Image (cartoon, rainbow, N blue to C red; front, top):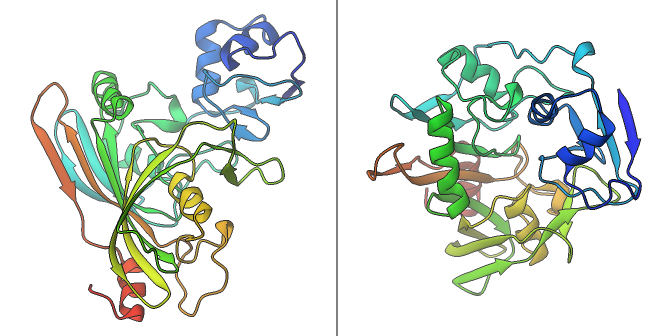
Length: 303
């Protein structure tokens, strides 16, 4: 493990540029592969090549010579909701990571994707993120687009970047939201006290979530959410910031509850996108998951 405290020589530089000055014997492609394979952490968190380095940031590089980056196929159960020659849409179960990390190499969706699709997965984002275009938190279930080759990956990633791919979620939140519709536009950054937690921060990244109320209860609200950006924990942080945390989201302030579920009651239930190399529009939607149905039933809502 190589550890470096950022000094003035690399302050405000991109991570990949900073690493090039730190790892003088490494090629640019090897540095990019280290980052994409989640072998580089900044302040304890994996980072993208484009992340700007701040003074006194802790950069940790796990040397590939000491680590096997090969991810093993595993028979992980998940549903394939849509599939063609270039891509798939899968339904990730709650309770599993989207992709491996340096700490957890097995039991993730990517292990399951390798078992199901073999090597027919894009590798633009490195071995740890084969086929992955966007991610869901461990305890969030729902739809993910999977790229089977690099051309399809670039085609779909551009739609996410340009916001022409639509991602919608369902959630139950604490308290009654009075407005039927709102836009939550608040920048999100990392906290200094808890590396697992995000927060609203003036110097964070722009983050926009659209909220529509579906049903109200005595002390809860059922909502649909549309992402315009894809920050870590975005929906959970935004809802907590307006004092309506996601039901059972203990990390972001829900507190105790009368009915138990596996953490946050949040589901990615709908995707809309153009099929690779086509203008044909595809809309994929799945039913409410078990967690949402369980809480709705408890609250006396529509299932």
